[in-house]
Length: 307
Image (tube, rainbow, N blue to C red; front, side, top):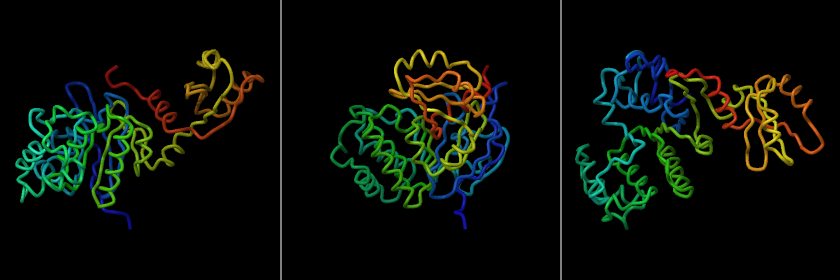
């Protein structure tokens, strides 16, 4: 039996003036799942998250978040959700402990001092508890933000690009903590632009210009794209890339270190084009398209709702 749903919405739509920024999106997220929400800047991810956590009301659509109606029970949703925004939004002239205590007061957390201490310990913040938030590096600000999201023991975490601007070590430690939380039963919906992070999610969805283009497990998303990719190595790849772009069947040519990835959805047409351009200087190998290849392809086919 599948796990019960933490998020179950259909047809969710949001307009600002004449522009539709979220267009009839359906989403189902199981409890205890880490669900990756991806897409280019301006694709509607943040607007969608704000509708889920009760900060915005959908113009159309229906559904539930943690069993509460997203249109009529927004106050209840807010009590049970932790929302980490893109921008650090705590008091920089207060210490870590004071910030957490303030958030605990807002949520009327029982035995507040104990809750703050547990939060400090869980995120490794005890030794810095008296440090002013404004003096923290990006990675430590991230830990404080996550600690604040967890202070009231939410059932769902909504994380909006939480690792932007932090170093790789801090990113890895953050994701290790997210997986520990999910193993304990917490549901996580997370937006990210990092493909390595997306691959650490249980399931994914890709939103472009307000429209959901694909969703599923990593393998399901890659298979559904039906994208053929060739890896090319050899000299003067820059000139080769220029010669390939725009030819029949070639949808994208992307440099990956000392290689090129050449991709297209019409495998036969792509193969014919590449056969006519091969020479002995370069080595060609067909590979499985990666997540970045797939998402660039999806973005190139999406219609800009602000165009």
